Length: 423
Image (cartoon, rainbow, N blue to C red):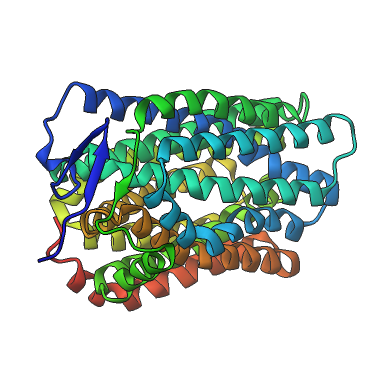
């Protein structure tokens, strides 16, 4: 007989399956979810500021489209290497303490970069190093937050809760944060960096109130190496998890290829400056927030497979349309629709993964998923940068759209088969 994992929450130990279905709703659990959403929103606003500031700093210091794309590579490459070890760590340590330490590191490196930019000593190498450290800390925090959701939310509320948290993330980052960053960069390039550092201080306080103390402890507890193998085995033996992670990885790579060169496209093709670019990103994010909020309804109406495939196909068509326009209004409209599709697809994929993950392996499952996705994302950013440097940013965006559309068509039948029973 297999022993069920022991869950340590609020100082009490339970021997249930580790999920929230056995727990009463309302009260303290709902407050924890609301506070966790607040923490995600706060840190995302800061991330949105530097989402605009970092590419603009790279462009200002180098003038190179490839150098701008390498910012995205530096941000995602650490996750490709560290996602699985991060999952093991999250399942073994106190998640509240882990988030606190990771956010403290993020705050420190951002302060150093802000001082570098403010004193005129800024160099693109310092920017890449900062972005890399932020990427490592982001993996740890994101996996920790994702791993706690099944402890707080019942299965029938999973898709809606994931959508709510994702909309908070996107709304904070790509709407409020991006718009604020676009307004602050022309005043002083270091201001958005300081704003991001401050956001992590506030987010840490909220996260400490939201995250249950303790950790999920497998019984008996194996060594870290055995847990790492268990995380890999989970994906190797699950066609559902492999298929979803592989498809989302390709979609994320194509999306990153577009976003990596969007600042160049906005400046050279659309004639927008820093403020205009920030407002473009913020305006487009309205669609993604709506997509995350609508994901639960779409899931119930058409199922997760159709939701994910339809979102991928629609986003691909939007990339092709974006590559062909020179009009700001058209570009904004296309990006709004693309963002809505991304929101629906992201939430559907996340909910499928969480529902298909055994209790006690939430951290490792989230990390294995991220490792697959993040293995492809830097390749997308690098590919987009190389194509943009040689053939222009419209060609890079069009190539990403064409590739994504082909992949969606090729995997459609298999994906629909493996996710048919997930609800």
